[in-house]
Amino acid sequence: MRIKLLSLLFILFTPWVFPQWKPAGDKIKTGWSENLDVDNILPEYPRLIMERDQWQNLNGIWEYAILPYGQPEPERFDGEILVPFAVESALSGVQKRLDKENELWYKRTFTIPSKWKNKNILLHFGAVDWKAEVYVNNKLAGTHTGGYTPFSFDITPFLTSGKQELVVKVWDPTDESYIPRGKQVKNPEGIFYTPVSGIWQTVWMEPVNKKYISSINTIADIDQNQLRVEINTENTSSSDIISVEIKEGNQVIATGKETAGQPVVLSIPDAKYWSPESPFLYDVVVKLNDRGKVVDQIASYTAMRKISVRRDENDILRLQLNNEDYFHFGPLDQGWWPDGLYTAPTDEALLYDIRKTKDFGFNMIRKHVKVEPARWYMHCDRVGILVWQDMPNGDGSPHWDNFRYFRGEELVRTEESEANYRKEWKEVMDYLKPYPCIAVWVPFNEAWGQFKTPEITDWTKAYDPSRLVNPSSGGNHYYTGDILDFHEYPAPRMRMYDYDRVTVLGEFGGIGLPLQGHLWQEDKNWGYVQFKNSKEVTDEYVKYGEELLSLVNRGISAAVYTQTTDVEGEINGLMTYDRKVIKMEEPRIREINRRICNSLKK
Image 1: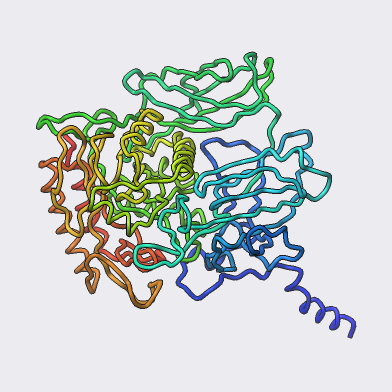
Image 2: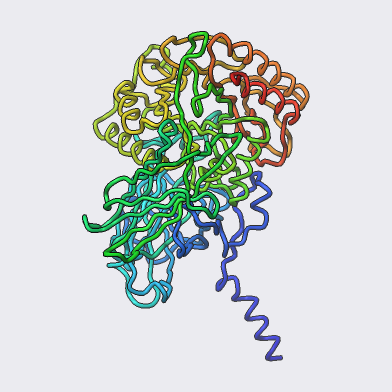
């Protein structure tokens, strides 16, 4: 009888002791989310461009609460949330909206491993949308604004013995403010989607010494067979030394050292070049030495590759990769998930879209008004695919911005809005500059939030001369930057040409095919044109491909097809939103895509 009573008590009270997370809502979901382990959410090391051998993942079940703006930390929280999925997503287990009148609170406890004793502890957030205040043991550790870039705080001064308490407060006004937000809107419809608020990338910790490496960037010069390695450090002096090893497999092929704060320039003889056809990466080991003792060491990687432009034999400016004409062709990739919104349910899912893009025969991805987790760019580096990186648009309204576009006008931003754009764009570039896959920066899309275009373009080009700048994809056009980019739906045609810049078709296509059982919503599904089955859609795609090929000799040097997957009410993807169905006949689109990608090769 006593055993039965204990069993009954265990059954009754277990739900209160152990998390009973499950996805929220009844929308479609990807296959990857069906067997998630809440104790092992996105467990992979989050930042392989700068890897240390010790770290701790803080993803998993946290407490959450939504309170009116300006209220103190709640005494009792509303329930549990699965981090790092945004509060509006199904995989958060919450699926509630956050508006500008409210704030989102998170809370959890953690412990510091005993082997980290006498180390400084860095607390990292992959991304939090938009304003985050971070408290450790009831003390403010730091504040960050910006929804797309990683940030960290040294929380060592706030730690105590035993369990530590971590609280994060978030405010996110989405489209009721000037903030960069991409396609998030309070009332999603058509080509605009569900808001994403709060933590949406991995939260993690790592131990470091007082002196440590804070960032790395490598710049290849294949014409001089050199590699410039830029290392930023914290708390170092002129007596500290940075040493760098470049490795091909297990063989060290180059070494160099410099005073901390100075770049290390290395000779790379007989370099192997990186390309989508041969994505060769060199391993990099960086050590920080204090009076002969190694006080920090990171593992990284790099590539020898060059992005440039040059006139061909017909006097047309062409994009070049490693000093050879190279036609960039890829899909508009928005990076949305029906279950995780901005956050892929697993790393396997994150990699899947990139691999399928490569399988489809593309050599490029335009990352559209979104910035991805660091592992996404690492996967692009390894798989071998070029990336055009958009700045997520903000301020104004895309609908009204399009009216401004037709009148040839730019947005007039407030001083605060302009300063924030510049801050967040610089942070995006700082975050992504180390990744070899990044080929083109895109500060504006279709006049959405577009302002001071020549000034922003010139700054972007000066800040990173190693890449090209596409000033405004499909937006108001100025004689600035490296690229003239126009959009044309649905079929490709030659609407514009610039003798002094590379001419590209930044968006076309949008062929729609709604598939029952794989739709975000049953009605109001949208595409530029719609067909009834896979063959019809594929026939139209191949027809557009042939038309695009006819434009290459007339001066088109790159193109972007809309789009990788369906997204909410848009049903014009190569795949369904849940990634369960490839909507076109894959061999046929691969064949035409490869012909397009190879159209400039000698």
